[in-house]
Amino acid sequence: MVQLAFDQTGSGPLLVLVHGITENRHSWDPLLDRLATNHRVLRVDLRGHGDSPTAASYDLTELAADIEPLVDEPPVLVGHSLGGNVVTAYAAQFPTRGVVNIDQSLNLAPMQAGLKEQEPLLRGEAFPLVIDALFTSLRGQVDDHEWQRLTELRKANPDVVLGIWGVMLDTTPEELTTVADSLISGITAPYLALNGFDLGPDYPTWLAQRIPTAVVETWDGVGHYPHLVRPDEFLARLAAFEATL
Image (cartoon, rainbow, N blue to C red; front, side):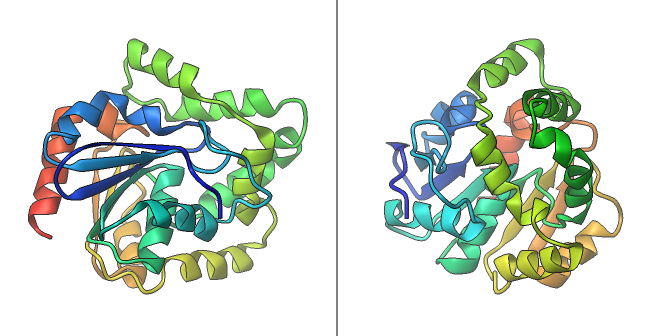
């Protein structure tokens, strides 16, 4: 287990925020003050990110378990990108009031196929260029000011990124399916999957077969950061979700 860097602010029910790959807890800065008016907000830097130390392993269950010692009541968890996988893995292991997964498909097969195609570049000197191109493709409707902030926030450590993506790079599609299903099995907490890209008509059924409580909502065309592109709408949607808990 890794001792994570974190901060906590506000008062009210516990809300845990988990950032995406290469980013850190400050990715949530534009929303923090408003969330802290009616939540006790815990933000973490995942292992290998921000001010948290690196580690030998980046297994998703371990990333999730790192958060548990910081939690003193069943929380609502909000995770973006990689954080969506982490909060899902957390809810499969620990008591949780609800989960909001922002733009992270749990069907990892398409991402695995894309990473396999890029693997020689990812494991070579072109790694930074591939990462930059990936994030550019995900930008969507993020404005220039916010994009500059996020770009300056990112730190793409190849050992960390490839360690996290090892679950896809180092497995067959069949093995990945087994691993992914095991990560999310047994989740009973209310679950909102909020996507900025349309994952196709089959995804809601695919997800509901694995997480019966899951609701899929798509703000198509917004891109990978719907919570930052439409903060007012996101905060209202989060409040509506919490009102059902």
